Image (tube, rainbow, N blue to C red; front, side, top):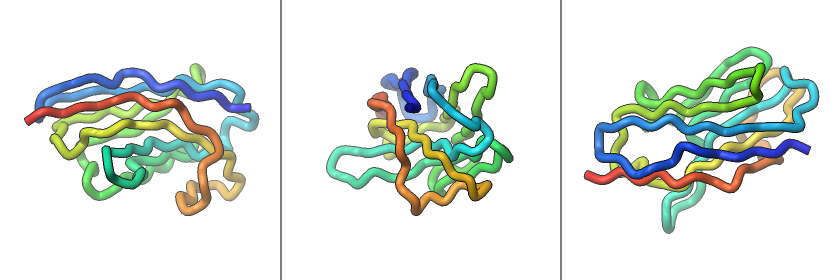
Length: 126
């Protein structure tokens, strides 16, 4: 059973930076997981922000965060990170980390994620 816990959320001004962390445990076959950051703003649907496949390190970013956000993971500590730079008010949301076992060798984001953290709040003021 994978368990995930996010941290690092805060209130910042537009143009600022934050680094979110997601401590994980319980992984089996560490090289076959798709890890992701999602976010959900009030009144909006949850959306994927970025994904990373543990085996290859291949990444995906939604268009609106490309060039500003970076997803990484530390295999030794089973920690997932999201470095967020040049933050904008529209980045305000609750951010969730998620994980799923995926033996295909890449992240298929259309397949639902199995494990979720409780979320951490990011607020960006103009």
